[in-house]
Image (tube, rainbow, N blue to C red; front, side, top):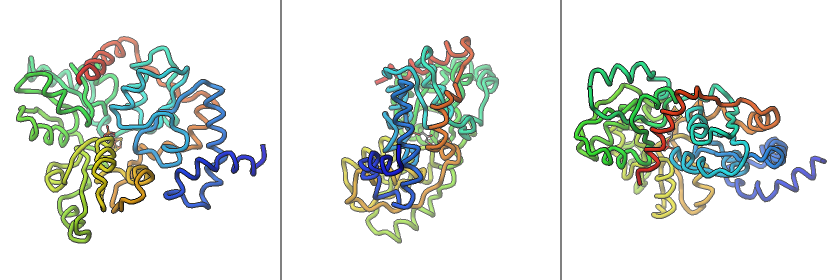
Length: 327
Ligand code: 13P
Ligand code: SF4
């Protein structure tokens, strides 16, 4: 296969991302993309790509893209032998929980999450002892071991519905303190929180949003609910990564800012050339561990396979399935 053939074959893909990928970078990506597309056929594999993947991963090799909720839902329907999770480790674990018979690969084992790191299964057991009978809702951004200790999971896309589905006036919601506070403000349910934070979203401040508005009159501010409540209070809309993307598609604001991870604006802007994106953002170092090069290696060498202790998996799966049953 010549270099010219690779460039010719991948030209339609470059066309998709040309607004956000400079032409001089494309030759570096094209070879990996071409190889990944061939490997997917050979391995009967699909790639699930989170909204925070860089555009060449998100738009050029992913078969299914979305927020954590969409990836979990779609993971249940995958008709393939192998799932490569282009996202972070907890997402790969969720895909494995829902597909115990399939091979689930994560291209870099270091793709973690500050929220998942903030709490252990033992912490959840202690909380249950302290608050007997209070239902435990666990954010999907946790290990399978933590999910196994909880009654039901939630994502940022369905947290409110999940909390309301419990019909309880008191709920333990772990581990994202800000998400819990933001949901408590919407529902009126008394929420017992944990002091976990997303290292990307906790850095945004209300003063920063006010400054942005001053510098960009008329800008529409969309914030992720992992942001501190003072930031959410300054935003025009709060929602999961998929909700933010949906908002831009529906409302087509002239100028918008997405208070979240940097790749979001790149990925959404590809579909909305007429919308101006103001781009202050924070990078997630864990999401950025995933590259075309390590996706290629994952498929070549079938690594790194995600495994979950079956005794943990059976209980963690229940918590995820209960969440997916909430509509
Ligand atoms: P979403 O479920 O909104 O995609 O969020 C996942 C995440 O890790 C946000 O930081
Ligand atoms: Fe975790 Fe925050 Fe990165 Fe999402 S953006 S994976 S919550 S550290």
